[in-house]
Length: 222
Ligand code: TIU
Image (cartoon, rainbow, N blue to C red; front, side):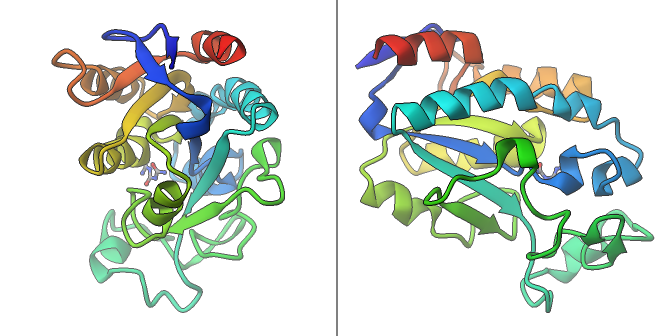
Protein backbone atom coordinates (compact mmCIF):
# COMPACT_ATOMS: atom_id res chain seq x y z
CA UNK A 1 0.00 0.00 0.00
CA UNK A 2 1.14 3.54 -0.74
CA UNK A 3 0.37 6.32 1.70
CA UNK A 4 -0.52 9.97 1.23
CA UNK A 5 0.09 12.56 3.91
CA UNK A 6 -3.44 13.60 4.78
CA UNK A 7 -5.66 14.78 7.58
CA UNK A 8 -6.52 13.50 10.12
CA UNK A 9 -3.88 10.84 9.39
CA UNK A 10 -2.26 9.19 6.40
CA UNK A 11 -4.43 7.69 3.67
CA UNK A 12 -3.47 4.25 2.38
CA UNK A 13 -4.16 3.24 -1.21
CA UNK A 14 -3.04 0.93 -3.98
CA UNK A 15 -3.20 2.30 -7.53
CA UNK A 16 -4.86 -0.90 -8.76
CA UNK A 17 -7.76 -0.53 -6.32
CA UNK A 18 -8.11 3.26 -6.52
CA UNK A 19 -10.45 5.27 -8.71
CA UNK A 20 -10.24 8.97 -9.42
CA UNK A 21 -13.77 10.39 -9.35
CA UNK A 22 -14.23 13.86 -10.83
CA UNK A 23 -17.61 15.24 -9.89
CA UNK A 24 -19.73 17.54 -12.05
CA UNK A 25 -17.06 19.72 -13.65
CA UNK A 26 -19.77 20.83 -16.08
CA UNK A 27 -19.86 24.04 -18.08
CA UNK A 28 -23.10 25.14 -16.43
CA UNK A 29 -21.47 25.06 -12.98
CA UNK A 30 -17.93 26.13 -13.81
CA UNK A 31 -17.71 28.19 -16.99
CA UNK A 32 -18.32 31.93 -17.22
CA UNK A 33 -21.70 32.54 -18.84
CA UNK A 34 -23.27 29.32 -17.53
CA UNK A 35 -26.18 28.57 -15.20
CA UNK A 36 -24.07 28.90 -12.03
CA UNK A 37 -22.92 32.37 -12.94
CA UNK A 38 -26.45 33.32 -14.09
CA UNK A 39 -27.59 32.55 -10.54
CA UNK A 40 -25.18 35.21 -9.30
CA UNK A 41 -22.31 32.96 -8.26
CA UNK A 42 -18.62 33.75 -8.66
CA UNK A 43 -17.38 30.88 -10.83
CA UNK A 44 -13.74 31.81 -10.26
CA UNK A 45 -14.04 30.05 -6.88
CA UNK A 46 -14.77 26.81 -8.74
CA UNK A 47 -12.32 27.44 -11.55
CA UNK A 48 -9.40 27.42 -9.11
CA UNK A 49 -9.87 23.64 -8.96
CA UNK A 50 -9.37 23.10 -12.70
CA UNK A 51 -5.57 23.25 -12.98
CA UNK A 52 -4.76 21.00 -9.99
CA UNK A 53 -7.49 18.55 -11.05
CA UNK A 54 -5.97 18.40 -14.53
CA UNK A 55 -2.58 17.52 -13.03
CA UNK A 56 -4.17 14.73 -10.99
CA UNK A 57 -6.13 13.52 -14.03
CA UNK A 58 -2.99 13.40 -16.18
CA UNK A 59 -1.11 11.44 -13.51
CA UNK A 60 -4.01 9.05 -12.96
CA UNK A 61 -4.18 8.34 -16.67
CA UNK A 62 -0.45 7.73 -16.83
CA UNK A 63 -0.68 5.27 -13.91
CA UNK A 64 -3.83 3.67 -15.36
CA UNK A 65 -6.06 4.37 -12.40
CA UNK A 66 -9.74 3.97 -13.11
CA UNK A 67 -10.97 7.49 -13.95
CA UNK A 68 -14.67 8.25 -13.62
CA UNK A 69 -16.40 11.50 -14.50
CA UNK A 70 -19.87 12.46 -13.31
CA UNK A 71 -22.45 14.92 -14.58
CA UNK A 72 -25.59 16.06 -12.83
CA UNK A 73 -28.54 16.22 -15.20
CA UNK A 74 -31.80 14.87 -16.45
CA UNK A 75 -33.43 13.19 -19.42
CA UNK A 76 -34.62 15.59 -22.12
CA UNK A 77 -38.22 14.59 -21.30
CA UNK A 78 -37.49 15.40 -17.61
CA UNK A 79 -39.19 12.15 -16.57
CA UNK A 80 -36.44 11.65 -13.96
CA UNK A 81 -36.74 15.17 -12.53
CA UNK A 82 -38.66 15.15 -9.25
CA UNK A 83 -41.20 17.95 -9.06
CA UNK A 84 -39.69 19.05 -5.75
CA UNK A 85 -36.29 19.51 -7.41
CA UNK A 86 -37.85 21.43 -10.30
CA UNK A 87 -39.73 23.79 -7.99
CA UNK A 88 -36.92 24.24 -5.45
CA UNK A 89 -35.33 27.67 -5.33
CA UNK A 90 -38.26 29.35 -7.12
CA UNK A 91 -35.95 30.01 -10.08
CA UNK A 92 -37.28 32.02 -13.00
CA UNK A 93 -35.04 29.91 -15.20
CA UNK A 94 -34.47 26.46 -13.72
CA UNK A 95 -33.75 22.85 -14.63
CA UNK A 96 -35.08 21.97 -18.08
CA UNK A 97 -35.58 25.60 -19.14
CA UNK A 98 -33.59 27.31 -21.88
CA UNK A 99 -30.47 28.72 -20.26
CA UNK A 100 -27.39 30.53 -21.52
CA UNK A 101 -25.76 27.27 -22.70
CA UNK A 102 -28.82 25.24 -23.71
CA UNK A 103 -31.48 23.63 -21.54
CA UNK A 104 -30.29 23.71 -17.96
CA UNK A 105 -28.96 20.40 -16.58
CA UNK A 106 -30.42 18.42 -19.48
CA UNK A 107 -28.35 15.60 -20.96
CA UNK A 108 -27.04 16.30 -24.42
CA UNK A 109 -27.01 20.07 -23.95
CA UNK A 110 -23.76 22.05 -24.25
CA UNK A 111 -23.88 23.44 -20.71
CA UNK A 112 -24.50 20.02 -19.20
CA UNK A 113 -21.27 18.61 -20.59
CA UNK A 114 -17.86 18.55 -18.93
CA UNK A 115 -15.54 21.52 -19.42
CA UNK A 116 -12.98 21.28 -22.21
CA UNK A 117 -10.03 21.37 -19.78
CA UNK A 118 -11.13 18.09 -18.13
CA UNK A 119 -12.74 16.38 -21.12
CA UNK A 120 -13.13 12.63 -20.56
CA UNK A 121 -10.76 10.48 -22.62
CA UNK A 122 -12.20 7.69 -24.78
CA UNK A 123 -12.97 4.72 -22.54
CA UNK A 124 -13.34 6.72 -19.32
CA UNK A 125 -16.80 6.16 -17.88
CA UNK A 126 -19.07 9.18 -17.57
CA UNK A 127 -21.79 8.70 -14.97
CA UNK A 128 -24.97 10.68 -15.58
CA UNK A 129 -26.66 11.20 -12.25
CA UNK A 130 -30.07 12.71 -11.55
CA UNK A 131 -29.18 13.58 -7.95
CA UNK A 132 -26.40 15.08 -5.91
CA UNK A 133 -24.81 11.76 -4.91
CA UNK A 134 -23.02 9.84 -7.67
CA UNK A 135 -24.33 6.46 -6.45
CA UNK A 136 -28.03 7.32 -6.44
CA UNK A 137 -29.82 5.90 -9.51
CA UNK A 138 -26.55 5.23 -11.38
CA UNK A 139 -24.33 2.25 -12.21
CA UNK A 140 -21.29 3.72 -10.43
CA UNK A 141 -21.41 1.10 -7.66
CA UNK A 142 -21.37 -1.82 -10.07
CA UNK A 143 -18.50 -0.33 -12.09
CA UNK A 144 -16.40 0.10 -8.94
CA UNK A 145 -17.25 -3.39 -7.70
CA UNK A 146 -16.43 -4.99 -11.04
CA UNK A 147 -13.02 -3.36 -11.02
CA UNK A 148 -12.28 -4.27 -7.38
CA UNK A 149 -12.03 -0.62 -6.36
CA UNK A 150 -11.62 0.08 -2.61
CA UNK A 151 -10.42 3.68 -2.45
CA UNK A 152 -11.77 6.83 -4.11
CA UNK A 153 -9.82 10.02 -4.73
CA UNK A 154 -12.41 12.73 -5.14
CA UNK A 155 -12.26 16.04 -7.04
CA UNK A 156 -15.00 18.32 -8.36
CA UNK A 157 -17.84 20.61 -7.41
CA UNK A 158 -19.45 21.64 -5.25
CA UNK A 159 -17.65 20.65 -2.08
CA UNK A 160 -20.65 20.89 0.22
CA UNK A 161 -23.27 19.50 -2.17
CA UNK A 162 -22.34 16.86 -4.75
CA UNK A 163 -18.86 16.08 -3.37
CA UNK A 164 -20.06 15.71 0.22
CA UNK A 165 -23.13 13.70 -0.77
CA UNK A 166 -21.05 11.33 -2.91
CA UNK A 167 -18.47 10.82 -0.16
CA UNK A 168 -21.27 10.00 2.29
CA UNK A 169 -22.77 7.50 -0.14
CA UNK A 170 -19.33 5.96 -0.72
CA UNK A 171 -18.70 5.60 3.00
CA UNK A 172 -21.85 3.58 3.49
CA UNK A 173 -20.77 1.31 0.64
CA UNK A 174 -17.39 0.57 2.19
CA UNK A 175 -15.06 2.84 0.23
CA UNK A 176 -12.27 4.95 1.73
CA UNK A 177 -12.40 8.46 0.31
CA UNK A 178 -9.60 11.00 -0.03
CA UNK A 179 -10.80 14.49 -0.95
CA UNK A 180 -8.18 16.78 -2.51
CA UNK A 181 -8.86 20.22 -1.09
CA UNK A 182 -7.40 22.22 -3.98
CA UNK A 183 -9.33 20.09 -6.48
CA UNK A 184 -12.79 20.74 -5.02
CA UNK A 185 -14.65 24.03 -5.05
CA UNK A 186 -17.63 25.86 -3.64
CA UNK A 187 -19.28 29.15 -4.57
CA UNK A 188 -19.22 29.89 -0.82
CA UNK A 189 -15.83 30.05 0.92
CA UNK A 190 -17.40 29.36 4.32
CA UNK A 191 -18.98 26.17 2.98
CA UNK A 192 -15.68 25.08 1.41
CA UNK A 193 -14.01 25.34 4.81
CA UNK A 194 -16.86 23.68 6.69
CA UNK A 195 -17.38 20.87 4.17
CA UNK A 196 -13.70 19.91 4.30
CA UNK A 197 -13.66 20.12 8.09
CA UNK A 198 -16.67 17.80 8.24
CA UNK A 199 -14.98 15.19 6.06
CA UNK A 200 -11.93 14.87 8.30
CA UNK A 201 -13.82 15.39 11.59
CA UNK A 202 -13.89 13.04 14.54
CA UNK A 203 -10.56 11.44 13.81
CA UNK A 204 -11.45 10.51 10.26
CA UNK A 205 -14.53 8.36 10.77
CA UNK A 206 -15.83 9.77 7.50
CA UNK A 207 -12.83 10.41 5.27
CA UNK A 208 -9.51 12.05 4.57
CA UNK A 209 -8.43 15.41 3.19
CA UNK A 210 -5.15 16.08 1.39
CA UNK A 211 -4.09 18.14 -1.62
CA UNK A 212 -3.02 17.44 -5.16
CA UNK A 213 0.68 17.97 -4.43
CA UNK A 214 0.80 15.40 -1.66
CA UNK A 215 -1.31 12.93 -3.66
CA UNK A 216 0.85 13.27 -6.78
CA UNK A 217 3.97 12.74 -4.72
CA UNK A 218 2.51 9.56 -3.21
CA UNK A 219 1.31 8.29 -6.59
CA UNK A 220 4.73 8.90 -8.04
CA UNK A 221 6.29 6.67 -5.39
CA UNK A 222 3.53 4.03 -5.40
N1 TIU B 1 -22.53 19.37 -8.44
C1 TIU B 1 -23.21 19.97 -7.48
O1 TIU B 1 -22.72 20.20 -6.38
N2 TIU B 1 -24.46 20.38 -7.82
C2 TIU B 1 -25.12 21.32 -7.14
O2 TIU B 1 -26.33 21.37 -7.17
N3 TIU B 1 -24.34 22.21 -6.49
C3 TIU B 1 -24.79 23.32 -5.85
O3 TIU B 1 -24.00 23.98 -5.24
N4 TIU B 1 -26.07 23.66 -5.94
